[in-house]
Length: 281
Image 1 (cartoon, rainbow, N blue to C red):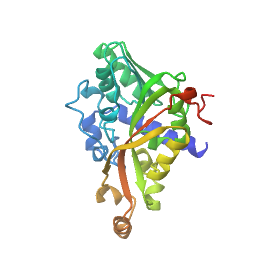
Image 2 (cartoon, rainbow, N blue to C red):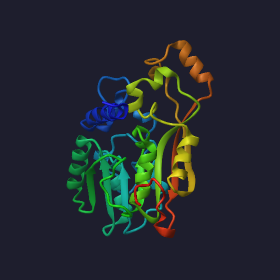
Image 3 (cartoon, rainbow, N blue to C red):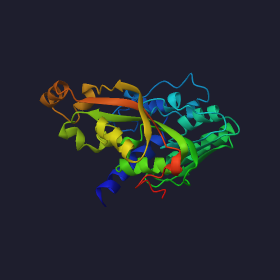
Image 4 (cartoon, one colour):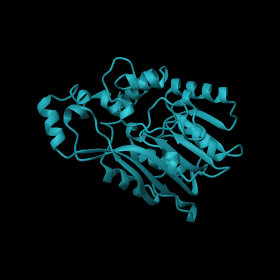
């Protein structure tokens, strides 16, 4: 098994476990899975409870932003959610697109897809669909989506360039994305980088903010804007599982920043905007 497949298995196993728990259980344990040992997702998550379309059964507390807040979703749009989990952002997006719109959630974890479909069935929605698949090879035709959203997921994808190339491919010319994710400024200690729990916990899989934005530019997006940014503080009680006291002190003094950002980018209209390497040519 290569490194990318190992990382995907770590994420798939962890999120399969999370899918079987409630939001309260996820927030009470260190990572959202029993047996404590990774980042408490409540550190990242924003409050959704006042948003139209919010469904508590779909909210596992796994996000690091509210991508729909800045997504400029309109009535009758087709929206694709990358790493849709139990459907939280999909149901919020569905309230924005209305009865004549379409929302497609994609997740690689079978247990999450099952939970999301169960939630959609209970709500009686016939214009919200969940497909199992990987973000690096989306099970969606080219030029299909008006808007792509994602919430704290692309940091978990080993090949982020391919993930953004696929995002570019499925967007219609003139379409755009609004993605919340975790990025870094500075280097993480090796003890965190090598911890599988911190990868599944949306920390050690994050890349440098400048590199993240550069990848977006290189696959062909334009009008790239950081819509929101906030500092993520990982408590010492979590860090101490991976660093000794001296290591924690050095990390605090290093000025390394862990950030949640929400980013916007649009696909150009001209010539169907097919960028080299995007997979749409």
